Image (tube, rainbow, N blue to C red; front, side):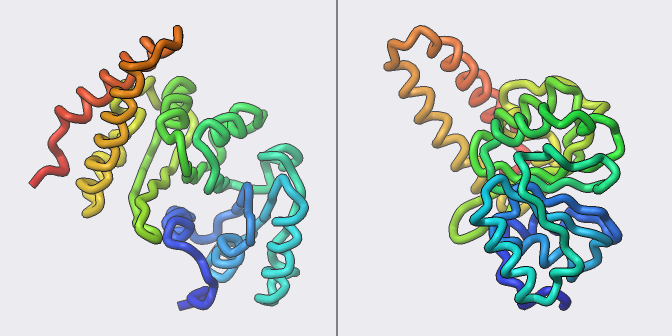
Amino acid sequence: MAGACVPISQRLLLCAGFVRPGALVCDVGCDHGYLAIYLAMNGAKSVLAMDIAAAPLEKARANIARFGLSGGIGTRLADGLAGVRAEECDTVIIAGMGGDCIAGILARCPWAADGRHRFILQPQTSGNDLRRWLGQQSWTIEDEQLCEDAGRLYTALVAVPGGGRPLRPGEQFLSPALRASHSPLLGRYVERLRRAMEAAVEGLRRSTKPEDPLRLQYYQEALAEINNWKEWEQ
């Protein structure tokens, strides 16, 4: 298969699987550039690889050159989607950042909600914060899938502006799209999620911080909702 020699991780392959043939892709936070290289070798019409820091961008440029794609992949030093014109892409990938950071990038982009772009998002942490923001802004999570990479479970989702609704606390941790994915990894993911949320609840119960009673209520509501869902149980 084309691109099989690219040393790309399973979580980035999960993102790549959402990209449509012939897409104009903007890869935000490209790091080593392997996702951009893989997409350029597997059907993307154009790829723009960007990073906020000069060092990883130079590393990406070196890897792009090593694969002979310097003329086919654009690179740009940029903070989030700043400096990218709406017409330069129809697909945006933001992978490997915290969910709150991803939400901030989307919130600061003046054309993100124009309805002409698909967003493939892979939060490393705080996925609930990202899903909460998407729901508050009436974005729709069209699809969300799981993968296992080096013993860890990751999700990646496809979001588009419009048509969505605010998500309940439990849905912010486990979206309706992910619940409907029928992934064989879903049961394990839910159990890990439950354990983490139970630990958070216990910690918040002992906390004396004035803001933590509301956080405790939020986690308790989310955990109760997840415990009532049975789709992944055999």
